Length: 596
DNA sequence: GCCGTTTTCGGCCCGACTGTTTTCAGTCG
Image (cartoon, rainbow, N blue to C red; front, side, top):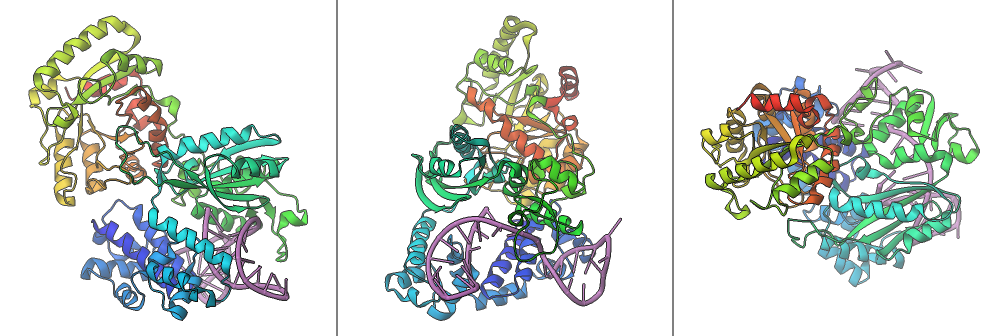
């Protein structure tokens, strides 16, 4: 584990343990916020002094010295003390849905419960009922949540969750009385994984929407069903395409429905889209401007503490659209993907981030020659159908034997086939003869330089030895980036979401080298990969690094994954100028030729 | 513990739902 990852998990652990000791909640929050701030840093924080550390938003003198303590001594005294004080299994109890710090602390202090096994015992022997405010119904809920938590608590991949949410939205739109319906939450923000599905609806007939939502066939359990809010668990079909199911996909996903008046749809969409941190900042901003913001709208703040403004009939300053609310807060419209309290409130105008329609080429695709299911002509036709001006054929290189990697002889034969296809398809599209060349464990490439120079495009990717330590992995990738014939580094870390952590190279060094050698880094758009991930893209964009967004197509439907790559790109603040797939044909081809 | 275009002290977002209570605490997002 790299220093930053280690620091992140320790700060998070401090926050959790503090919470369980009943510490001041603002102090708890400060550690949790600092942990998040650390997560989005690409610089190795162990090399920074306190002055540079406190420049990071969310880190002050106290936590800066904690970071220095970890860097210098390898441990944090306060954390070690907390670990002695709080039983190790208690954090797992806190993770159970419906149990918060107050209850878990009571269980620990009064009943001596220190882990999930102890909780189960207290439920079985009834001793749990001696706690205050603890009745039969609550115990039933805890019991159900405990059973669920022991099965899985993994977040769902964006690509699995999105079709589920879209199906719900389509279904609810058909319910009588529905005006607007949309999904929100981390899915709308395009995060690579989502915790649950958030659906927002405006309607004249709330009961009918609640019924359609709670009583659908795939609903496994209804957790809450109120007039304006419902919560259910939905059965998931865990098909993950060419990566065989490993049985770890959660069997169900939580889905929340929020029903709002049509006049508040924009404010509600903002509230439900989040992120929580972004919303908190907006509300603070509203207060400073003499207003108060909630999911019903932006209201003048008349300091009444008895009732909410909407229930007293106060007229909203803005509520109908997100644009209106942002405008009244003195902000430009902020795209959902960057609502993370990561500098977006300092924007003075809406940035022109890359969009799906900007993409004019795919530079990473496979055919039946290696492990794809499309013939060469099928692949080309798919690319033409998408309106692309260029498609690169990049089957695997010889070391990827399990994926049918091409020997030099087969590579030459494929090029002959491509020449034929060029005659057949004529000016409709440019077909590039390329390869997805393995970056071997030592950073050398899987074909000789002579072959690499002869290809039209080289995407170099790591496929094996993905557990290397940071230093080795960094050296390995740097060697590939510096290679004179490499155009793009494919899925740079090799991670698979929820499956494999992949390499953890020093990203700032990787990005700096990519800029220096004019090598693009790929956002692999497949939802199992999304590699580069959002935080890496953001750092790359800030450094002026070129980015490729490719679908790594193996089958026709893989082209549809582009939207997930775009979401990741937008989360990284990518504009079309830095994305090679958004360039006009001539500009792209000239760029590729510089390394041939 | 963090933070400041009213502040270096005194704040720190806001509302819904549930289950337990006779008015609200805890949890969640």
